[in-house]
Image (cartoon, rainbow, N blue to C red; front, side, top):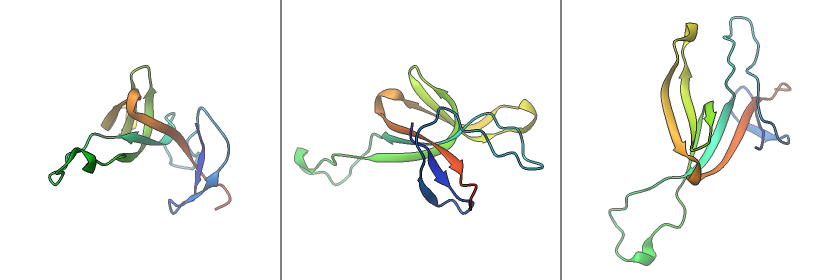
Length: 113
């Protein structure tokens, strides 16, 4: 996994090696989140109204999804858009088949920002 540093405005600030887990920031009033925030790049199926010839097909349709990593295999990468308080679970969970995942990159806050 490639670690991407992110400042508080959400701008990418560079990469910093590899990591398996990125702890959530520990600020006063922040929940204790044990799920790393990641960027998943994956090849999605797509629909094309205007395709006339087989050669007109787009070679790549890469989608980028950001979320809290709930599971990384064996068949899916599962991301939640929201972690609910008091152990109530998650909201808006996306399950992406591993066979179409190009990369999973943990996102971390840039502590210098």
